[in-house]
Image 1: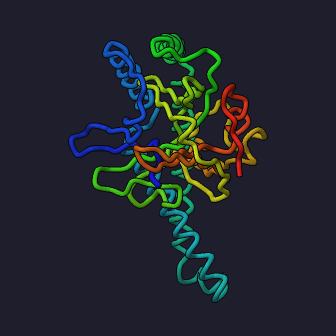
Image 2: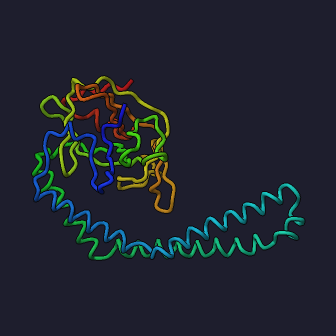
Image 3: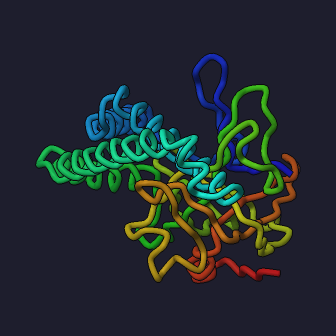
Length: 286
């Protein structure tokens, strides 16, 4: 089965959603223009919060090089003795330690720059405007105010690549991400709304919902607190400088069988309670 919430990056540069056949309402053109403007501003802010590309590459090279040199030194020392390895390969330590030091300094500078940019008045103004525009766009789509906000696992792949299911590892032809949707029940459908459209899945098409305890790697995190916080640590683990390389410890698989095909909707386990609170949805997990 294919992941219903898959996004195909076309060779033309456009992005096609595999959930399009289930879309029941789309944002007007003016609304899509506002979405594009917000996304562009957000990317510009993100770019300004990073070190120059050359320094980012230097940080990566120094980190990997230092780890390889020092790791090789101590691995050899465990086999033939520290004194023997030092007499032959002392330069591994002499080169590796400064490389790690340079990487550490660059990582600190990157952290400080990001912190300064994110605390700037321009970013605070952008966040406030984004919150206002987001509310207006949801109202334009008719998303109810009491809709549940839940993460859904999206698979992004390139045209010609395999459309992924839950059993296919992310690193081969695409990558998993977490997208936040407003979820509600309307007209005998479970609806997933982002800012651009509403995807409606007939409740009669929902065959089963099962818990899958396999690990799943995703490349982002949407919640206000880190994945390693007490609230989420039983469901996810974050790694990387920003904690945004996330391993989900398990997820829910909603099996959809419809005249349009067989699909899966993958939802992190930490959203189960929110989904079970939805009026009109009887969600039993096997």
